Image 1: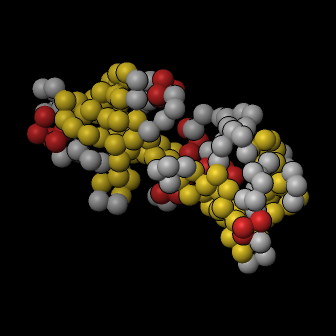
Image 2: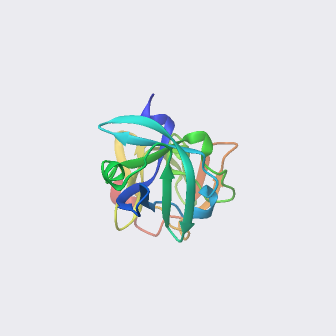
Image 3: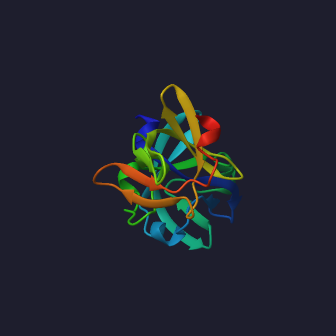
Length: 173
């Protein structure tokens, strides 16, 4: 199983209750999209292991999950700090200017003033700000991902049209 075929959903933070439930923090803008999950993959020592879900309750960005065959708090405790993953095909489809970071790798960035400034090499998901890392003629250009800068995401042509603030692109060229 290749981890690149999965996305991170959250982390088990503690055992919960007397029947082996798990308290999970979800890393998603829309936790309710996952209220009907039937299975998850847990990262255990670098391996993604599938587990069936008996019950899931979601409140805000947290969930209480009961995995099949996890019957006691002692067994549940063994899963604390495990990361939870799902296959990429379970990501909800996005529209408009919303996108998943992995989807835009290779997209051409077109600035209003400079035209094509290169392709997205990767997205740096920093605590303060997510940043597009763009390769342009052996140079790196870093552009913050904000609604003010990202104007159009064109999935058909694999392009993102931006309006970079004055001076941002110049500092890299």
